[in-house]
Length: 286
Image 1 (cartoon, helix red, strand yellow):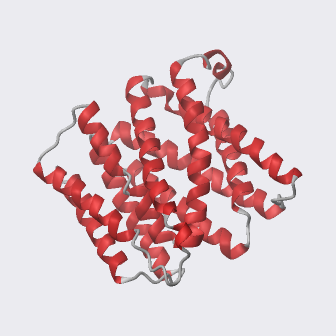
Image 2: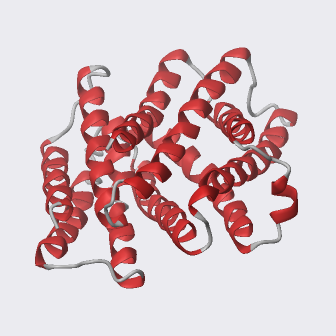
């Protein structure tokens, strides 16, 4: 249970960090790249024999980790944009409602339990996403409405990939190895794009981006580490574990968005958030 709580706190801090970056005028993308390098370094330090990575790169799990690393960079960047343009609360709900995809995958592929209550929860979750992305367009540019949808799909793909590889390709002791390769791959992909941006003077890499990225990367490493530990030790099936984790993340981020950042949610968004809580509660009781 401790791993569940720590995973919730770390994941919530990732979303909140981008709002802090905005306040401190930290460029998101350079910090994201540094973040993945830091997380990958944590993984190498965590491993007893990091050199084993070189010999196992041709294996299927490693190839999957490299692909996932590329998706990590893209999804994290979209998360930073969505947090700045739409607010931390909307970002968290849109991305974490991707648990609908995760739950369906667990039910269909891994034959996890599915009753009327869980199905009702899935339908409520879908409805909540619809309400939440109905943003007040009088104050927000319409071109940003696609961001929550991208997070919804991207988050689902990431959760499915983590769950699938852990159950199909990895031994219980290899989760750190998988996370390390994923973060290092994300760093390499992200660094390539960052170098191009720096050469074209489209971005900056200052000390505050480096420091912010190191802090973010440390939190990011522990968010994945505790997620894997929670999936292994909680005794829950994946669909239930993900819903419990996501309800905690939503609660923390929405609370911080309203209380700390003075975010104002319109009536439709409040309805969506309440539906999201109800959906996750239904799914987690099954």
